[in-house]
Image (cartoon, rainbow, N blue to C red; front, side, top):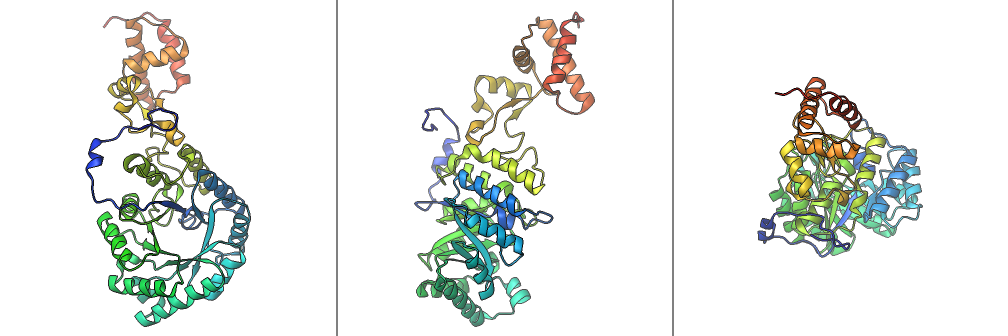
Amino acid sequence: MDNNSGKVLWMTSPLQAAASSRQFAGEVRIADCTLRDGEQQAGVVFTAAEKLAIARELDALGVYEIEAGTPAVSVDDRDALAAIAGAGLRAKVSALALARRQDIDLVKSCGAWAVRLSLPIGYVQRDSKLALDDAAYLTRAIEVTTYARELGLHVIFSPYDTTRCDMRFLQHVVEELTRRGTVDRIRLVDTSGCATPQVIGDLVREVKRATPVALEVHCHNDFGLAVANTIAGAEAGAEYLSVTINGIGERSGNASLEEVAVALLVLYGVDVGLDTSRLTAISRLVEDMSKVPLQRHKAVVGRNSFAHESGTVVAGVLKQPFTAEAYAPQLVGQIREIVLGKKSGAASIDLKLSQFGFSATDAQRQELLKRVKEEAIRTKSPVSDDRFSVIASEALSTPAVPS
């Protein structure tokens, strides 16, 4: 696949073209939730200044909408939301409110463009938190969406725990809100991360039969399926995808923005409008500010995403990177790294010798490879470039011992 510069940035399976059930919307948009659900990860706290800094980077990244917090939580949250809403960003700014007037008033007072009205529709949530029967639930939904509309807010209704609700009742609620014209979007939420991609796809298709209103999917990662579920929602026609940077969020987290966006672009040909070259930088920023360390092998933005050690792999990558990579590191703001270690081969040694300006005989190269492997086994870690320089200086000044 080529970008505008003419460089090939990815190479994927031709079998992708065989799928025929995709119904992507004409435009798929990202509604980032890092500053709200991301901060709901246990132990995570963003200051108002940090929230504004992250919001600016999300805006530069090109996200359509930033869900910037829950103003009812604290004065700090309200200050942060007001600062983000007043920062002149291109991205739309929304905030979460429980289904009550005082919370909606707070969202309005902070200058947000949209309110996300949170009212659980799943059996467990309704019984445990609200004790609302069907009639009372519908009355509440109509009342709060109408009130938010009267305040001039863009209204996103979030009947959360959607994957554990009665489908007929959900469709009835959606139909009634649509008929009254009190909602601009419906968010379908896999609150406990218990759905499969097939369930999410079916859910989106069923709700679309009940309303022409835009749909959003918000998936949690309790079974490691949040990204797959989010893409399944998009494939079924959901126009908005709720995600977080690095996949941070409650419990096991949310769908990772970077994984969803790159998978859609590279594997499905769906461009969500992001400058993907900024993904690694914003990932590091959120990692630093959230104090949630990123696993090294994290897809797209992990520090090992483009790191190669195995001798046969490196030999191939140096000739043709797509032998071991589906997309080029620069697509997501990364760089390729050749790591020296226990599994290294002669090609890695040749590369490092060239980079440091060393020359060596075949026997010296083999001796150097032997020492690199021994060092990696002894330390149980890669051999850094600085350490390689020392080992190489020693090995090249000492005659190799014939085996």
